Structure formats: C-alpha cells, structure tokens
Image (cartoon, rainbow, N blue to C red):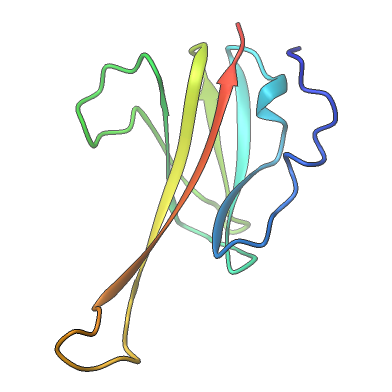
Length: 121
C-alpha cells in the first residue's frame, strides 16, 4: 500500500453543504484499486447523483469526465482507479431558487464538491 497512515481524518465528513467523503483512504490505494465515496448534501446521503472522476493524463475533451458513476440509495459511488498520478473526483448539485423574487433574484444555486488525491503506482 501507499503511505496512507491513519485514515480517520480522510474518511470523516466535515459538515459542508455538499461533500464527497471517501469510504476508503485514497492515499493508501494503488493503480487498479477501487475507490468508494459517499456524496452528502446537508449531511445526508445524495441518491442518484452524478459523480465524475478524472486523472491528470486523461485525454478526454474539455468538459467530459473519463469516469462517471451514479450514487446508490446510500449516496455511494465507486470508481476503478487504473492510472497513477493526480486524481479529481467531483459532483455538482443545482437547486432551483423559489423563495426569492424580483428582477435580480437568482433562479438557481449551484454547489460544487471536489476530492483530489495522488494515486501511487
């Protein structure tokens, strides 16, 4: 394994509006490992949400993510990490704003969550 150490701080939610919480320590994984993450919104699992993963050497077009996964009923998504180097996991939640009115009132709010780490060989 890599040089992960105590994963308790890595696998614990921080209480953010939206967050990606790894269920296993990504710093202790190797190429070919499976990373499981839980997407939380307001501290609750976010089912059926799209989560994307990309690595530094990806050759995808801008805006495309080489790996995507939908969360299950518990907000869990999983990825097979088949390339070494820097990785970025992300998810976006867009919410329609109904409470505010007026010409300058926003129609939508977007919340972005990211998780980045280095995958060893």
